[in-house]
Length: 192
Image (tube, rainbow, N blue to C red):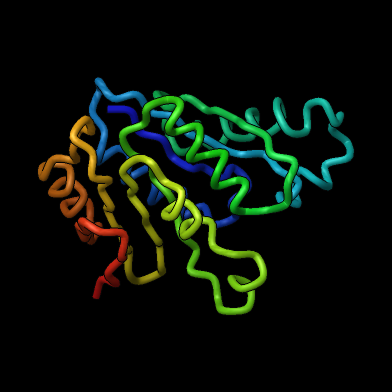
């Protein structure tokens, strides 16, 4: 199975990255291909203001270096970092880049974090996870890390060629202290 993680190396919430790493370890086995994908865009303040880095490397080499270091800290040595670039400031354009890449690489599962933005920031900037849901062409595994609760949603695409997440992977997740919910539609259910 090919699993991609929509990874943000500039994410300040390290607990969320650690939670995603736990999910990846629970879902994957030694035969799976793991890829962390990041779309470098002008919307990322860290990149847009990194004037000390040459423009030719700011959206390619630099984010890949940051990704590699972050993945190493998470002890994810098997995962391959991939960086795409997008000139637009639009989150939808970034989501489209990722979904196009998952289609091109015939990805079976895409792991995506949601940050649960408040009304005004969501209205202005949009929701990355929601854009992925609308554009996706592969199974999605969406998660949210809160301080007291961890929410995980699995949304399978209806496709006969896709390998399915087996129940043993979900049981491993529950043993690791993660709540999970299976959804056969694109509607998420809030977990208690």
